[in-house]
Length: 366
Image (cartoon, rainbow, N blue to C red; front, side):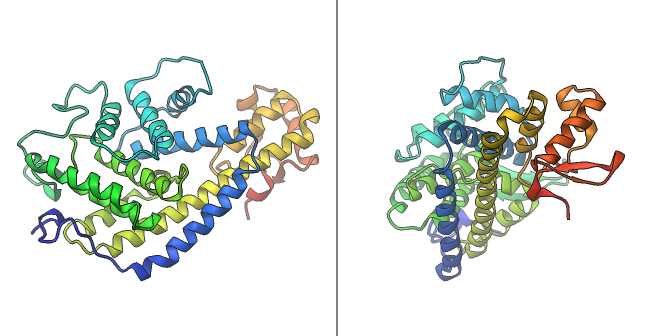
């Protein structure tokens, strides 16, 4: 068996551009729709959606690698790094590092890629780690860099990256390709190749998958001339086994149409989610604009909680018990509050008595 980087024509990837054209067009259409929707948001709402998307991306890109981060901590750090908050809280290194990566990739997308930038990303991601030889620098250990599953004595090698001694050469070629490809490749194709190319080199001891997804984000942002806010990691995390299967199918060959089709379709699904998120912020703003004087603080708190849920809606619908937990209201008060929200048309109700559930109108269970 030989890996993609051992092939004669590495790193020249081949693919069927004609199969990717419909995906490129659909992505461009969605991008235009999202951009138009964002223009209708006020500054505060735009900041809210940026923080929401960046924090979700940070938590999900870590989750793909089996690392669970505290969303509130990541979000708090992102707000502070964006200058939207001065509140300082005790944030662990993993959350702080992820926030730094998300904000840096968001703000500095226009700059050409450099080794210094990549080393900075890695240093942020693995700060505080004591089990690594190299932090913020390419790996230098002599042992093979392998992706392995199974117990000792029964291991399966899914991929072996280039030897550490060859990493600087491979990465010099990658950085040149990344910067040069901005002139020649369409957005989805460039982002998909950037991800697969980088993760095939696996240049750092840890953090390679998270950095490869950040590189795809930077590639997209550069190609469209604005922060992409793609939501790619959240979409991958929906079914990460499919992601790893797609990578595995494309690590032994330089023909990568299969990978680019998977990646392009995933990006389109991710951008559809982003559009739904923006539309939810618009809906929330419209509710407060119309009903602000008629809502009490308990009702506002519950509405905020509903809108913080995924675009698919508050899982299972909002119950009276949920409302009491969120607002600390007594049951009779909760019943009155919820009925008023129904009467105003802000929520719709399904079921009766203990089976009653409350939904934002477009998320009523069918």
